[in-house]
Amino acid sequence: MPTSIARAHTNIALVKYWGKADTDLIIPQTSSLSLTLDQFYTDTAVTFDERLTADQVVVNHHPLSPAASRKVRHVLDLVRHQAQTTAFAQVTSQNHVPTAAGLASSASAFAALAAAASRAAGLTLDRTALSRLARRGSGSATRSIFGGFVEWQAGHDDATSYAVPFQEYVTWPIAMVALVLDPHRKKVSSRQGMQASVTTSPYYPAWRQVVAQDLAAIKPAILAQDFPTVGTILESNAMRMHALTLSAQPAYSYFNGDSLAAMQTVRDLRAAGTACYYTLDAGPNVKVFCQAADLPTITQRFSAQFGADRVLVAHPGPGVQWLSEPLTD
Ligand code: PMV
Image (tube, rainbow, N blue to C red; front, top):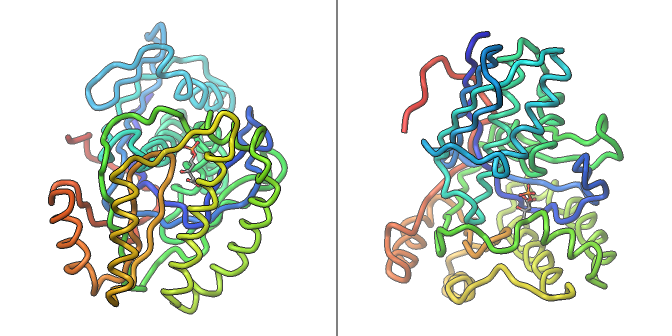
């Protein structure tokens, strides 16, 4: 069967997904809203081949063990079921995202896998169906099918839980500065972490209310390009998500010392008149939401603090696309 290659970009949630209602189908407790980024992406090539005796998954030139490729094989099984084939697949993936460092490489990885695998198996899925398929690999991947601002509507079952574009083509001159403060794999996976929050944090019911309020408030602010309102909401939403880690039993945290220092720098910049706001996911890296005109001030400040090679700049990016060229490093 032919090879299909797809590229998907990662996304950063401005109103976070943190907790599942159904852990098998990955149905979230709440809706969420993200911004797809242009700089961090995954290219994935998939070929189904009757001659293979098992799925083969290679990420950044390294073959994954059967245990490490479990989620990938789960998505391939769903594709095989829909396409009514039993052929195993060769999956080759190049991540242009610091893997598992809280820059959500799983979002771009499973969105690219859904697009490449479905087409390689001869399926023609629309973007809603692709979003549902990507969701089965990783929740945040649900949103990476689309570009710009994207809402994942929680729904209540497999058919109703998918992302929709909120504003796909972003003309607002905004940027996200990603500070790579620790490039290593996170210690508590998002899957484990959010489950611990749902089952043990006494604040979880309050989080559901926070998300509903934040979603209702951030949408008109995005449409109005109201930078301070969007920034204030995304920063407080991230902190309230992380409060669920500290209030879990046993408690844990994704922050390290540099995360706290970077958050303080954002507050200092703000106090000195440069509007910018921070968010963090399931890792120590801090992402700074800012206006493009302030990038020189902000990148200089963080380059002085952490080193220029740790400061990455991204802008709003596109949704999933299929490529005709072979993969490159
Ligand atoms: O998609 P997962 O299972 O890696 O979870 C992502 C969770 C956060 O990145 C912290 C929040 C989000 O909405 O992306």
